[in-house]
Length: 116
Length: 111
Image (cartoon, rainbow over all chains, first blue to last red; front, top):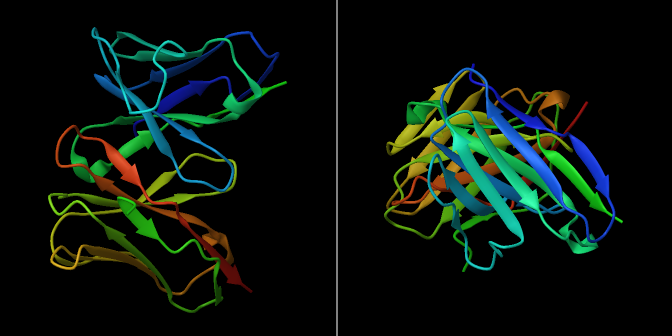
């Protein structure tokens, strides 16, 4: 099946630094990538939708200058958490629609970010 | 009112029993519905997709959709301990291809 490769799986960074998370579609072209954040024992909250070659669309309440999204090619989308703070510690997951709706949306393996 | 609502559980069932998971949604224009399973610390994996009223069966899983009542459910027959996970109901918004997730129901299957 279609695979979205997400890296890194986990990262620990110091407060004030930036962290980049990558999602690559390995065997299909992802024109759209969805970025989610999940806090412990909570559901996935959509942060933004990235489209290849255009600006990302952010959900209400998500700071676009803090969470920079780049979708420069059909197989790569990146999320950069800038000036990270402890409250940004969370599980970040990317997702793409593979093709027919019946196949659903495939998810990356997630990135556990801990800001200390 | 949340867009997608699920009982957080935990729902405990004995091995071999039927587990019934429920979900309601607020956007009457929604057309497509998904059930995902998520193990702790892992990303979600697709279990079922349904878009027509009625039942859809796939192995031990049956999804049921009632658009008039804005209700979708998932039945797991012959529950196994390996089914213990959080089950997420997801609804595709009418516009934008975005999925909105419920908070998830924790299922525990006891052997």
